[in-house]
Amino acid sequence: MSKINNNKPLVIIGSGGHACCLKDVAQLAGFSTVGFIDRTRSKGEIINQLPILGGDELLHDISFISGHLFAVGIGSPIARRRYGELLLKKQADCPAIVNPSSFVSPHAILGSGVLLMGMNAVNHGARLDDFVALDWQVTIGHGAHLGRAVFAGPGSRVAGDVICGEETYLGLGCQVIERVRIGRGSLIGAGSTVTRDIPERMVAVGSPAKAIRQHSEEEVDLGPRL
Image (cartoon, rainbow, N blue to C red; front, side):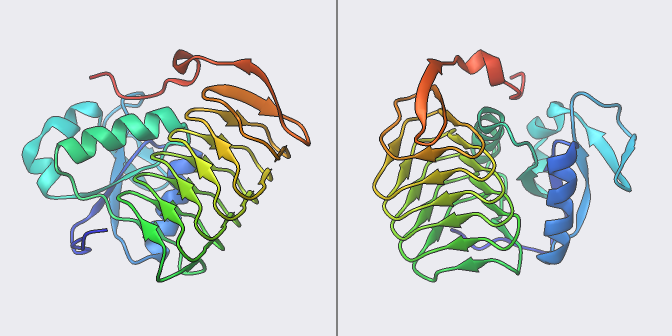
C-alpha cells in the first residue's frame, strides 16, 4: 500500500447509507470529506451535510482527480470493482480507510481503497485486495485472502486460509470455516455457514451453506456507465 497525501480532501463515490457511514469513518480516521459523486442525484443537492459534486464525468477530469482522494461508498461488489478499476486507471489516490477501533496485523496487507468500518480484526498474513470493504465487527483469519472488491457484512467471520474470489458478497453474520474457497462473484446469504467450496457466481444459503442457483452480473450491476 503506497503512502497517500492525507492533506488532499476526500471525495466519496455514492451517497446512500453506506457512503454516509463511510463519511463518518473517514472523519474518525483523519480525512476531510468534501462531497459525493452520484450520477443519480442533482449537482448541489445536500446529503448528510455535504454536496453532490457531480456525476461520473468528474472521474474523467484530470485536474479533479489529481486534487482529491477517493473512496467508493457503494456496497455492491461489482460497482466497487468497476469504480475502483476506473479510479486506478486514472491514477487516482485511493487510501485505505481504517476505523481506529480496528486491529490490523503489521503482517497483513491492505490494498488501495480498502475500507474497515469499525471493530474489525485483520490477522497475521491476511491479504485484502483493492477496494475490499469490511462492515462492523468482521474478523479475517490468518492467511486469508479476499480478492478485489469483496464485501463482508456486519458480524461476518472468515477463518484462517480462506480464499474469497473477487466480488464475493458475504451476508450479515455469515461464517466461513478454515481453508474454504469461495468463487468469484458468489453471494453468501445472511447467517449462513460455509463449510465447503462454493463455485463462481452462485447464491449460497443455509448452515451448512448450499449453492441454490447461479446469478448473472447484470442482476447486481450498479457500476459506472463508461
